[in-house]
Amino acid sequence: MAASFVPSPPPLLRRLLALTLALAVVVSAAAAARIPASVTPISRSLYHSSDSLLRDIKALVARHPDKLSMDTITASNKGYSTDLFIVTFNHAKESTTNSSKIHVLLSFGQHGRELITSEVALQLLYILTEKRKIAGVDLSSFEKILENLVIKVVPMENLNGRIRVEEGELCDRRNGRGVDLNRNWSVDWGKKEKDYDPYEENPGTAPFSEPEAQIMRELSKSFKPHMWVNVHSGMEALFMPYDHKNTTPNGASAHLMRSVLENLNHRHFQDSCLVGSGGGAVGYLAHGTTTDYMYDIVKVPMPFTFEIYGDETASTSDCFKMFNPVDKTTFDRVINKWCMAFLILFEEGLRNLRDTQLVSQGAVDNWVPMGGDIVERSTARKSSPDKRKLEGLDLGMQELRTYFRLFMLSTVLLMFMFCSRISKNRNRDTDLGGDMAGRVQNGIVQFLFRY
Image (cartoon, rainbow, N blue to C red; front, side):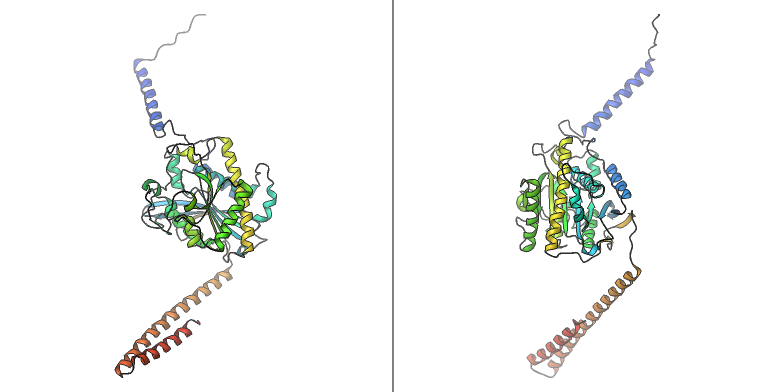
């Protein structure tokens, strides 16, 4: 058989092909330049993108409307805007009133580079609703515990910062405009230590300057959690307040927090985790943190910070490896271990809070965030018309009492001035005049605060 002849392409076509190949090489090199060869890239086979993670959560909520609901909150400040997704787990809604349940608030992904935390959030939601098994553990024993909890999960608090990491800024922990959300809260805000790093710890222009922090603040005040956990990575630790000083709070509340953490550490981690105040155990002080605000201002009985993973062998420039598992075995182990830790925390917290009779007085469905507008709700909220009327009447009576007190206070001041003027004009003894005015003032004030 005669060999077939394949003509060579014309010179112009050859040049075009060569130019196309050269451009492809340049584009690939430019993309790779953002992540040096010595830096571990995101393991796409293990980790969801932010979009795919949110899609999976929305699908899970749609499959379990009897247990899950989801709010999407949008807030903005000076041209910067963000969305925050809040998933509520409320098991056995009809059998137990919300006011008698323990409220748990969990936040994941506050720092963009800590992707593993959001993966734990997703898996925890699967376990709560679809009873996904954790190796070697029968989860049916936790069913009764979950009936007594309302759990709000923020799976990705720093969405804009997460997107920056996915685009190649693997060491960035800040939000979309360069602020550390865990330094943007008001307790001891803005104080800088000697080793302060403006890139890492930028606290913002003022407390709550960032929309993400604004939404979380209003959520915490309206939900009134009994337990708060801010989930991070970088090491393995169970922290309680304080972050901004090298001490823990005093009194029974501190004893309660430490008892819960030590029991969790002993039961589940074989005493391998650091336990104590963030400021005392981590090696540096942090100012303007969420957990300190939750304790000092919101008065959460059990506010914690969990650090769930850290690779001490990674270089400081290899941030993805430092803060996130990079192989499947470690990835699965971390997720299973910390999902189980949360279930044990719920058990320990429920037992201790019930023992101390700390139960929420507010209904879980009665919150309206002030930091932003609700732009999406996956389930309808129900409220009794009679209840709304009673609440409106109560608010009206409170306003009337406030106005009445202001009026009476003004009257007291005027009468005091009038009595003082009379005493001067009649040349009476100043002590007698002052005593008369004081008696009038005290009598009216006593009358005033009866109403």
